[in-house]
Amino acid sequence: MKLNVFLSSVIVDELYFTGKTTVVIDVLRATSTIATAINNGAKEIIPVASVEFAVKVSGGIFGGQTLLGGERNTKKIEGFALGNSPFEYTKEVVEGKSIVFFTTNGSKAIVKTKYSENLYTCSFINIDAVAKHLTAFDTDIEIICAGRNNYFSIEDSVCAGMLISKIKEVKKNISLNDSGTAVLTLYEKYKNNLTKMMRESDHGKILLENGFEADLDYCSQTSILDIIPFYTNGVLKKLKVD
Image (cartoon, rainbow, N blue to C red; front, side, top):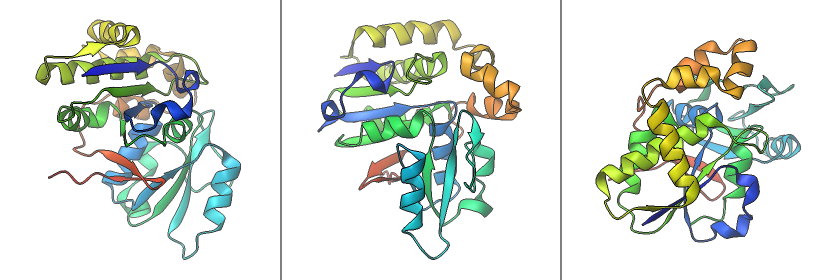
């Protein structure tokens, strides 16, 4: 098994993922929020690559069971019911609802990888569940760091490194591409203080400036949710694991 890490989704053509097994990571905050929403009973998350498409999709769904969620440059988008803080996606708000979801980085990365045969989302908060599931595969795995505005982000890379580390504990015949080796090294450096790493990251500093300190603390927790968001037919749902 080879684990291929990409430090941004922008460097890969979407057709590359055809037939692949893929994991998308956007710790701050899309994949953390997606896992939280699904864990709290959201029917499905519909990731989209633009605000305009989010509005178009939601306009075609009736019955009051659809919410618009997401952000642009950390801020909730005007006219959207929800932003991108996991604390907004409570059971009372999202249970039974479809959520059309746009974020600056994460939802775009998910849409970019939509042709994958198996597509999952991962963050620190559900990393054990994802790692355990991936150890059942014998195929190569593509790990996509959403990054920030098409650039490298340290929090996504450290999460990718943690994911690799956990898979390597079980699977011994693992090989890595150069980016995989790099993120594993980063994880070893920062694994003992994820919160500090995130607070000192570029994205973390912006979230702190905008009042999202609690989000940073929440998103730096490991394996508090036993859930795997799985992409199928254009939506993310909870993977049913036997």
